Amino acid sequence: MTLPLFVHDALAGLAAGASVELTGDEARHAVVVKRIRVGEQVLLTDGAGTTATVTVTATTKSTLTGSVDTVTTGAPEMPRVVVVQAIPKGDRGELAVEMLTEVGVDVVVPWAASRSVAVWKGERAAKSLAKWRTTAREAAKQARRAWFPEVTEMVTTEQVVALLRDASVPVVLHEAASGPIADLPVPGRGEIVVVVGPEGGISDEELAAFAAVGAEPVRLGSSVLRTSTAGVAATAALLARTRWR
Image 1 (cartoon, rainbow, N blue to C red):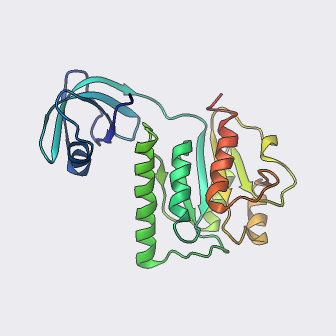
Image 2 (image 1 turned 180 degrees about the vertical axis):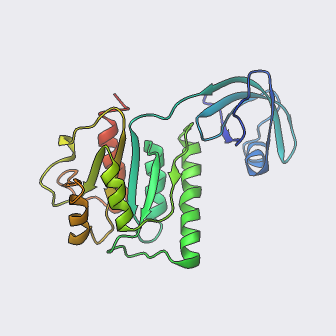
């Protein structure tokens, strides 16, 4: 049976035999919701590559104390995958972030595309970004990832152009593109940047700006995917040729 996993932000430097205490919401979830008891084992991760197997030695309603059995630290998987996600309407943004996290994306970049229906401004922007980040954290726990994805601040089209310019593999998804994503060369290292447009599609001006830095559009297949699922499909297609081999 897979051990339950919880987040602990200070695992770096711990070794087998050390004592570690989990507090706050994570501890309450472990003790009250999951009903973890003394003698059971759990996994703790800091979301930055370190995971510890811990045997529980004591609990209260708001704390969990344990003895570290093993500690593992791994490097991030390569190639690094960045998905620029145009801000969709409703809760489809959180759905996209959840699935992108589960599939293994390293960075999610909210993009204020010219045809985005939803607009992030002021208080709404802060709340929406917080939702995306919470969704990424919870999905990373569910997927048992040692490295949690970063959700950046919202970016403009000019900033997306800069990301594509610096990418090892720039990918712009567009249903009308002539070339399939399968034709793209994918290196084992470097950074892949995937741009997913909004419900209204990527504008001609945006496509021209992306093409100016070498990011020509590609298609996934004959079907037109929703903005909330296109990035997941593209990432899976690319990772099947790199990390997942």
